[in-house]
Length: 375
Image (tube, rainbow, N blue to C red; front, side, top):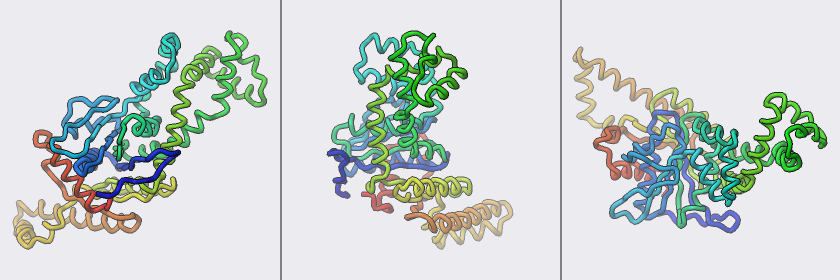
């Protein structure tokens, strides 16, 4: 087992971060779950978080339900542990409010605030926005955490997750936010809210916002920010940590693809994004590939040749031939720009829920570890 990272951030040890990215339908969630289980079998204490809005992780683990706060996965005779969670920002926001120490009256005012209610209800369609905050919360909540495996949203939406720490941090730390909080504290009536703007160019900005949303909206927005002030302060700290964590030399990114040209295009775009964000180059995983051993097996090649000569079976033989050709092209194309390429052959039993077992998933994760050197 690879020695645990000794890297620290502001005096705290940083667990190792493993990100799984890729197009939809390439088996990314299954691989991330298997990878977490394999790490646990090596004696590590692992967090497994999915920010995929489709919530496929609970299905991959064979669970009926997976709460936002996380659930311990039962692993018999395993030296390590896995705690899994599916991102649900509405529930996270309410939990963060409770943990911020707001008075009961302040909490009630916040929950009645129209903006907070809209935010809690609608962020389900934009879970990537606060995914970095939830990710950075894991080391705080889980004592002894050695690794966090993150199953990101499908396709290029993962780009939003990777860039959100800086974007969201800039918003929360922006001058407009400070103006709004200052004005709401200085003015208790909505009649004088806009008229008392006296700071530089703030008047022009706030006048425009007032015309669009009305002064009542502005007051709701300002009150919303004040009530969430402590929550935002914690979010800023976590975003700072998340930005550092994502760019750590110990962070590993796995870009999952399959023998599909559209999935390969997404893999290229994600790899380019990692480079642009100055993150460690990702390792490419070609999932559900045709087994190399079978392709070189004399008995199989003889059987395939016989199929080509039979009219009823020639279509299937041609399909296999074309699949192998495309797979070779994909391997060559991705191999030119990736840190490394890992090829995982198809495992049919993992696609059948009735046959899905944690040991099957773990064996898949061990194959990634063996080829990646991330162990």
